[in-house]
Image (cartoon, rainbow, N blue to C red; front, side, top):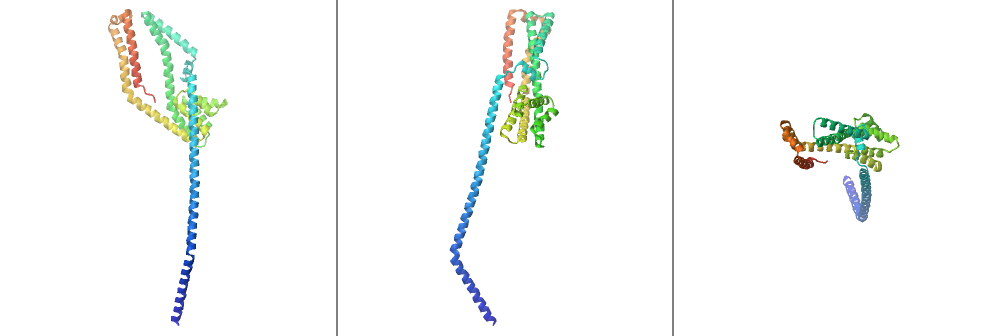
Length: 336
């Protein structure tokens, strides 16, 4: 009985296997066709997805190119306007006095020059010097010394402004990242920064209260602070206003660039200090020797001032000294 059941089970299993094999053989072509169809559908879907991704990537590249072109056009336009503005407005004495942060007017400056010239001429004349020497010293002191003072104060103020501007930009970056708008960040600088940055940003705030926009107000800063760093700052603000973008990142990059420029200038000054000292010693040596000779033997030196040949010698010496000083200055003067 058990052997009969096993035989029936074996026959049923063989029949099932045979039926499965026949069914597979019959349906094999259809299964393969379905697989190929599915593979083809998957490839088409993948190609469509890739096409969408490629199109999106091309659109992003085109948008970036368009934005970059817009920024470049804006930059060229701003640089062109700045060059035209610099050509139209010369650095007049009145503008230089204002840029130096001095409070006196142009008429007061001229009055001081006249008073200093008269006082120097009177002092040297009473000291017994020759008339032409009195006129020369009075001209140098009365005309050259006040202008040298204005130029010295101008350079000093510009140096302080460059040193403080990166710190002000860092404060603006932190303010903008914390959620403050640009106007409030500028007001913060106008109230908390050090001079002369504080007074210049206060002028920007006052210009905004007069109705000017932020880019226009900052662009006017170049009138009172004619520095390339301020021009960079104005260009960054103007481009951000026209083309948009991450203002905090742009100002952070500008602050880093300004600090790198400062380090480079300091390095160049350190490397050229030996040449500057040598040039100063060589330029001052003839005057020091002439003074020592005059103190020890006045008659030996006074012949240069009383004899016409001495006048010619001093004139030629002054010309050659001026040429030498000009050449040495160009050799040790580096623009960054």
